[in-house]
Amino acid sequence: MRRQRADGNETTTAIPRAANDELEQLVGRAGAALNLQCKAAHQELEQTQLLLADATRKLLDSFHAATRALSGLGEDEAATRVQQSLLAASQHLQFSDLVGQLVATTEQRVDGLLLVSQRLQRLIQAISAQSTDPKTQASQLAGEKRAFLEAVAALESCGDSRVRQWDTQAGGIDLF
Amino acid sequence: MRKLVLTVDDSAAIREMLAYVLKSAGHRVIEAEDGMDGLQKALGNQVDLVITDQSMPKMDGITLVKALRALPQYKGIPILLLTTESSDNMKEEGRSAGATGWLVKPFDPNKLIEVVEKVTR
Image 1 (cartoon, each protein chain N blue to C red):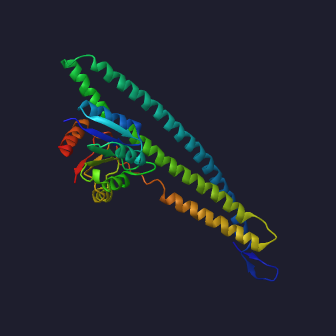
Image 2: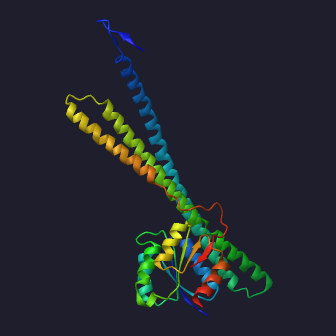
Image 3: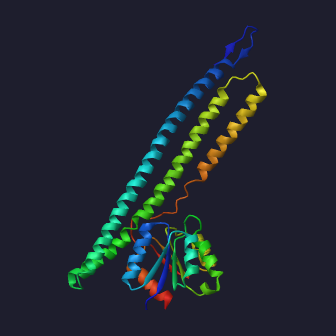
């Protein structure tokens, strides 16, 4: 939309400024929501790690208790079946390592997102800031842009998950 | 024949499952929590086999393999990498470092014992 100035020429400056203000508000609101949800996700992932560690420790303790009990039972058919079940369990109990690594990678991603949202909010503040010294303002804005881009670059490179497994089936073996 | 095996992994679950399976097969086990700890324990004991994770704090598995291969007493000792990673590039890196084999987690206990028997024969 264009406006007619008093001298008869058209100007487009008033509308873009309003649009910029609105865009800053929208991005600021999105950044705040992202910030809040990333913090909550970080906390929930920490909680998941703690629950996983606790459950794993108890499962391992129960596993070892069962093996100790089994060692006193001799070597009849039932004991052999239990022994086979425990051996199978030793494969599936390795899930905690795989899941722990996946959760750790996800934590890195969430932390990366959180940093980007925090840097985005600071960048918006720097853009909106009114300063009497244009040089200082430009310098601050350049600093915030740089920090924002660094956070984006860190987010792009984080969370290179090495866990490709989708179940606890045994992995391959290569002898060189 | 009874062997002394050094297992190196920052996951307690993996260390404990390795120890269980190896001891069930009659072997003795020394555990280490990371590559640095593994190197120290390898220096303090003459082990017959090393099974190490790749991604660990302080020192990763491939660096441990290189450090062990630099020691005269570990030039001919089998070293297996046991890891979640299965990319060909990483396997090639492990092979170049001097690893004897690459096992992807989770390991099958029976197959692990077969591999241990084969590489320590």
